[in-house]
Image (cartoon, rainbow, N blue to C red):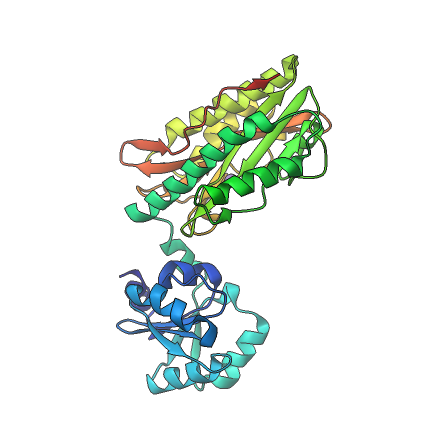
Length: 354
Ligand SMILES: [Mn+2]
């Protein structure tokens, strides 16, 4: 088991799991209040009255024993730590507040805190098949939602109308909701890489960029499509769309075990740069997805992580021209033995909606 190995590698006796996504991943807990203490052999999950029944259902199948705490888990945790003779305790230092840390220091006697850095997050990089299946389902729902929203793109409706429409259907189709704030950026706003849906009305002759995703059983999807709304896309609209499309396809077909994230980023970036738009692609090529919308590995010029079978990354190059508009195309791709498996079924060819 991965936690057991981590405990050995760090030469510690136990790990305190406190962050939302680590709790979700390692224990299965989806509530808001709980903390877990994992030893090499035994595991405990501390929560209060409100969550005891839910926690038993969710965490026991993952090997955690539920301990009901009165209010705040700190005193009970301190007892368990003391009684188990823990000397070195791994903590999620990146997620612990100063207030929590001073609590730990005052309540946990004679303990050495060991920073786990990104180690718990990195355990999540390679997905099991059951995790891949959940992401596939999240992608399937996203594809379906996109199909439904396209006919709703009409002059005069607001971006927010479209995002509400999409989020309603995400839930209707079995998702838990959006995996992040739905981005709908129309016309000049499409040049904003992260323009969340606003009160702006859809108007003719411009791009409409949709970047959205769905949570399904705790796992996310993340997809971007850019459509043209109007009769007469300009040469420039067609030009930048086709450059992004080619760069995206090139990167998707280059996914394979053994390539580094920076090499993959370079393939798309070099293509866009050759075409003269390198300065307008100001973000990384993609990122891992899983229980969280942005996970390891990050696919950018600086990341030397080598892609391995079972990782799932997004491939999402873009070109953004201020005052004019922008294009991004994004798919979710599983690293398989023989290459990348693109999960999205939605076409990437330019849709011109009249
Ligand atoms: Mn993304």
